[in-house]
Each structure stands twice: as structure tokens, then as C-alpha cells.
Amino acid sequence: MRVRRLPRDPGPAAWNRLLEDPAPANRLEASITADWLVIGAGYAGLAAAHRLSKEAPGARIVVLDAVRVGDGPAGRNSGFMIDLPHDLTSDDYGGALEGDIAQTKDNRQGIAHAAAMVEEYGLSAEAFTLSGKINGAATAKGAAHNTDFAKHLSAMDEPFELLDSQQMQDITGTQFYQSGLFTPGSAIIQPAMFVRGVAAGLASNRVTIHENSPVIALERKGDWVARTPKGQVIAPRAIMAVNGHLNSFGYMQGRLMHVFTYASMTRALSEDEIARLGGRRIWGLTPADPMGTTVRRISGTGGDRIVIRNRFTFDPKMEVDARRIAGVARDHDRAFAARFPQLNGIEMEHRWGGRLCLSRNGVQVIGELDVGLYSACCQNGLGTAKGTLAGGLAADLSLGITSPALERALAVNAPSRLPPAPIAQIGANMHIRLAEMRAGKEL
Image (cartoon, rainbow, N blue to C red):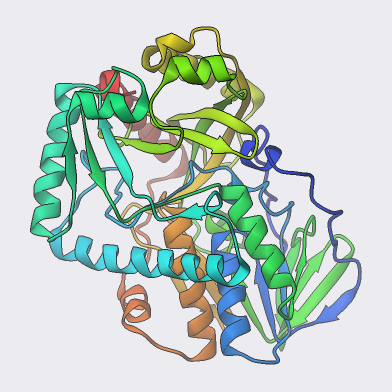
């Protein structure tokens, strides 16, 4: 089958721009063979390659990515590996109790896999640290969402701490937030530093990664044959770790929702600006209302900066143009000004968009798509944790290794069918805009 579209990511991957330029890409420019082919070098693909390298000693593993590691969606998220339920379609992230307990267990398995790679490859605390995160509430409505979620966490027997306005100001430096809900189990990462560090560690461990080598055709001729513009890989087993681009390969048509979210990052703050801001130099905050604004304060490589993330759009073509980024930028500037009036005039250095893949019924696509072809896709807005989990589970499935997490993944129904494309796009975007309007000051 010919691949219908290749990835197009809007704006720079800002996290990657904070790092030193990588060595030139190792493009695939020959016909090679492998024991396993992994398509995609994001969280799922790297986790799959890592698991295979541990469980299949001596096997040759080839990873292909359409762009540079860290430039695609893996380097464009807000940098949270969230362990708890994080349903973007709910009011307070929670769902059914039993399902949320199982989901938390699975998310933690993904985070544990990430932590194991961090330890093995000697990545820094800036790349990955288990620091927890805050749900910040700017309004009484947001505080009510946090209260409801706290009750849900109590029923799950999960720890949390409710923060008052002064505690929130001590952490963030701003009086914007009325209250907060701290949970300890999430990791905060520098996304590009993490994936580039894992990729570098894997490359010394019988794994070859070819960047700027998009798969333009994939077919089974006994073995799987993946063609790139200048080469091909022949392997008996292949793992698809391409999230929503599973549709581009002809699978799960009419079942996956392609959503973009957007972020802006300030220039590096001066020491005077850091003093004016106050608060801690490193923290991460998700909004009490899932449609609100995520904020991160970072300090390290590239200096002290603030990252703002908000707005969602449903885009079945998996592309957005520069005008969309420019339009969303106004919302980012408004959100930044409302939260940090003491930093009036600080300009944004980078603005970008990132792709999410969601299913209507909240399930991932983990399984065997065809003989010897496995999927680790559809991360439902939690690609860092769920993607890492999916990659490891897809690798296990290809190895014949079972586990309770894999059994749960294989037992779910397929993603629900979407309405016809025009209806889905109009309806989804109307629903998103209405939810954003209801978020009010949380946005």
C-alpha cells in the first residue's frame, strides 16, 4: 500500500530548538534487512525498540522516522507523563472508577518503562523527573472540578494535596490561581531531551535509527517491505508506532480523530525578570478544566522560560497552516498576560502546534493488524505515558509475551466509528469551541 500522507508539523519544535543541533541524520539509502522494523521514533517507537533489544538478544532492529527525532509530535507536547486518568472530554479528567484504576496502573507501567530507560541511558533530571504536577484552578468552577476530582481520587485510594491561593502563588509567582490540586505520581520531562537521549542510548544497543526516512509504501511479500524515498527495509515483523498516521497506512479508517493543540514559549527570562516573577523556577500545571490553559515554568538548557498551551482544533487532514498558528497566538498572549502581569512585554520566541489522536470511546489501537504487523497507536492525548506503554506492549505481543496490561489492551473494542467526515469535522469543532467558551477564565 502507498502511504497516503506524510507528517507535516506546524511551527518549530521548540523543545528541540533549546538543545544543541544533532549530528547529521542517518538517512536510509540502501536496501537492508532486519528482524524487526519499527515505524516511528516517538515514545511508542522508542519504547518498542527498547523492549525488543532487551527481550530478543542478537536481533537486528531498525527504526524509521519521517523527521528528526524530537522534531515530530514527541518533541511538541507539554512534557507531562501523567499517571492518573486524564480524559480530555470530561469535566475533571475522571471516568468510571474501575476503569480509571486500571488506566492508572497501565499509565504507571508506561512511566516505569520510561524511568528504566532514563536510568539505563543516564539521562538527566531535566530530561525526566518524577516530580508530580498541579491542577490549577483560576475560578470557583475550576475549584469545583478539582474538588470533584479529589473525591474521585479518594475513591481510587490515591494521594493528593489541595493547595490554597497563597500556596499557588508561592509556587507559580502569580495571584491568578485560586487553588490547586497536587498529585505526586506524574513525571515532568523535557520532551526533546528525553527522546533524543533514549534514541542515542538505543543506537549503541543493536538498534539502528534512520531519520528523515519516511515510509512511503508498506506491503507484505512474505516479509514486510517498507520503502522510503531512497531505500527499503525487509523484515518479518513490523511495529507501527505512528499514532494517528495509522490512517495514512490504510488502517482504522473513519475511526480516529485527529486533533491539534498549540503552544508558545517565551524567550529566556533575564535575572531581573526572574526576580519579578518569583515562585519556584521549575513547576508544571495542567488546568482544572481540561479545555483550559496548561503552563510550565522551566529552568535549565536554554534558560528560564514559560510555556503556555491551550486551544484545540479537529483537523481530519492532519495539517494546519501558519494562519492557524497566528490566530491561536493571540489566545496564548492573552492567557500569558492574565497570569503574569509582572512580565508585561515579554515576547514569545517559539509558537507551534502538535498532533493528537483520539478515539470516541477512549481506546488505544494495540494489537496485530495483519500477519506480523503490530500497532502501538492512538494515545488519546496522553502520548508520553500511553505511547510508552503501547510501544512496550506491541513489542511484547510480537514476542509472544503476555501480561495483564497486554490482556487489557487486547480485550477492548475497536475505536468507535466517526460520523461522515464533514459532519464529524463541523460537529467536533463546534463542541470544542463550546467547551473552550465554558472554560472561561481557565482558558
